[in-house]
Structures are given as C-alpha cells and as structure tokens.
Length: 268
Image: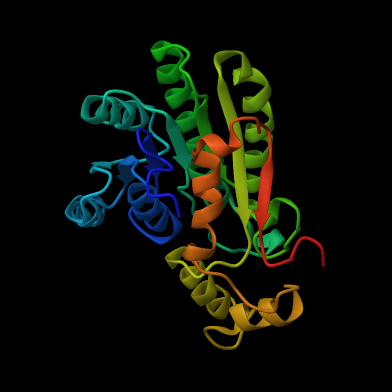
C-alpha cells in the first residue's frame, strides 16, 4: 500500500462513524488523506476522529450530520473547508434500510428510506460539487463517490424500497457524471453485496421479526450459500480498497461507473 496515495486529499464521508464509512475513513487517513466524518452519532464520530488523529497520518474531524438536511450538508462542507482548506472528494455512504413485503409498504417506510438513501445522496453531491466548482479546476480531478448496492441490479421482494433507492443512486451517478464533467469532477460509485455492518445486522433481525427467517444469522448464511458465487459474505475491509482507488488519482479517467463488490451475486 502506498502510504501517500491519498496525501493532500480532503474527503467528506457521510455516515462515516461506523461500518463501511468508518473503515474507509481510517483507510483514507492511513494513506495521507484528511477526513471529515459526517454522522448523526457525533460522539461515535468524535471517537473515530480521535483514533485517526492519534495514529498520526491524515487528520480527522467529526460533524453531526443529517444527510436529509440541506443545512447540515452545507455545514459539513463548510467544516471540511475550514479545517483543511478545500474539499477534493465526497464519499456519500450514509444509508438505511427497513424491510417490508411489497404489499405492506406504507408512506412512512417509503419516505424514510428514500429520503436518506436517495435525497441525502443528491443533496450531498450537489453541495460538495458547488464547493468544488467554487474552488476552480485543479491539477487533478475532483471526485464524487456514491455507495450503491447490488440491490440496484437484483430485485428483492422484501426490500423493495431499498432496491428503488439504490436504483436512484445509480441514476445520480450517471446523471452527475455527464453534468459535472465540464467542471473537472468525476462521479463514480461502488455497489456492495452482503457486508457485515450494523445496517446488515439490523436487517437480519428485522427479517426474523417478519417471519421471513427463523433465526438471526440465517439471512447471511442463506445468501452466501445460494446467491454468492464466492459462497461467503464480505466485511468492510473488502470494500475499502475500491473506495481508495476511486478517491485516488488512479481513477482520474473514470466517470459514470458503478463497480460491483458483491462476491459474484450480480452474475448468478
């Protein structure tokens, strides 16, 4: 690993205090980046920032952030610029899920998931892009990175709204890429499959409560055995390399792409 691969990059990460977001924050800092950890759980974010700063590589700050709020998005960008001078990369990682069978979906379920996963991503992209445009073109391109999901390619009847929201993430990646290219901003993303994170742990419990699974952990086991070519679920460490690649100069000529990191789910 090049310890300076991301040196000089200032990166805002939404949903950055736990799961894949936290792993990426640490990994980016290990390679020299400065990170702003945006999360609803400010105390968790501060603890992670302290850990990163103690390691002595890249610097970190934490801000309380509701991604569905334009004010919070603007405040997070402003905090990043105030702390580090500018912003080079936005990683839009925040996401939620709450499974319901198709005929049981109600407005609250729809709005909750779509507001965070799709509206929140759009607001983040727009706010960060405005700051990048204000900063002017640099030697290397700016990066917007969207966290999608294999759910944008694999319809799942117990998480219809989540699938829909991730189709939206894919559309935002494509539309953002063609819109922002003239400003030297690339837009790419990665689509995980089954990743052992707090989000998936909660989904696992929800599926048991719905009666769709008989015991906790069964969802992971069944998917690994029946849906994944590699026959095993993944962990945040399996994703961080792709995220770092998309944040680095190595991906400067890529835009509008969604990379699947799903253990072969999409090809099954």
